[in-house]
Image (cartoon, rainbow, N blue to C red; front, side, top):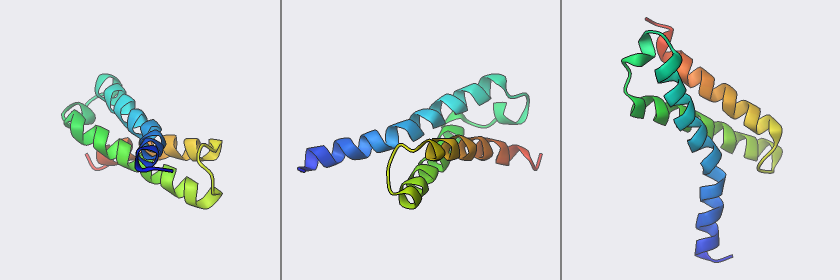
Length: 90
């Protein structure tokens, strides 16, 4: 495996988490009433993507493989919690 292959593996590993973060931040800004409308999109997207990527890495470590359905379920749950967490104190 050369360096370019390694870069493509890392990009393809992180792409679902980053895409989920961007889509969920956009949906939260459009749908969620009140608190998240005032939060900047970049902050929401980065929090959701970071939580999803962390769940993806933890799923890889626990299961030993990438792309398990339990990992994707954990990514969705982590993304939802990261978007919900800032609204709970308001």
